[in-house]
Length: 322
Image (tube, rainbow, N blue to C red; front, side, top):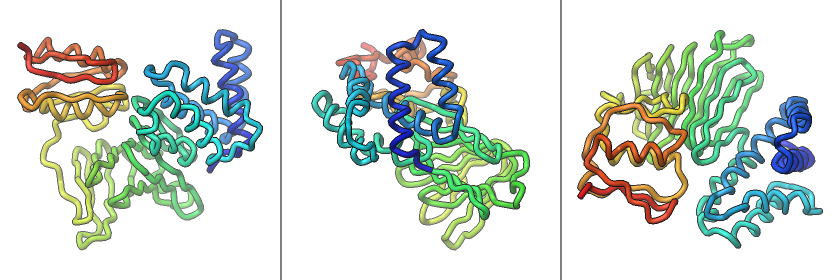
């Protein structure tokens, strides 16, 4: 479902009013009333909010506000293509970094659900299932008389199945990734689309992998994980990170390579984050909060011989401690 240009414009109008007068309880109540009036209103609000968050980089103070005001003041109809042209014209003047993420910025306008970098979101689906989206994720929803389908376009999601897994009309609950079709049964599982495969991890219940290859149907039980690609589904012997901890705002590691850990943290930050090769194989275990990744990085020298070097707020590198 895509909200109409009229409703998108209303969402932009409400967001600007809240930004300017956010302390007004009466205005906040009116905004909440508008959002709860229909699913289309809430969807438009979430998309505009996600897009504004992605644009509002500290390297370009006020870029998100200026772009929203440009849309609000435009006399053109807000078709998605027209809106993106206006947004691109505003932000290209201020930041090449914004342009480098142009594909991701399309997501709030072309996907049913999307999150910005560093954002996480929970959505209650029409059948009662709970859909959690991790950072920089986009998904579409297709619920009809035959099926209940979530299409993962990119990123990572967690799906907690409703109490009745086939629904009132016997419709299967499915997740479609780039590599396979997954069917959930009364439980919880995580689907992560990686560069060359899809990672499926089941924490409760079971999941069926419908694969077009010779392996056909494969089952994943609670506590198991599989990597799925064009060649088939391969079990993962051991995982060095809790696959679903991000839904609680955490990274939980078990003897994880520092290089892999830094790659994981980088998913939740704008800009460049890396570590030097001579410390990449150091190991760490622990529980780290995602709400402040700078604070998270500054905890590492307490347990590892590393130094956090900032060239700018957006260029960070870990090096061996002198």
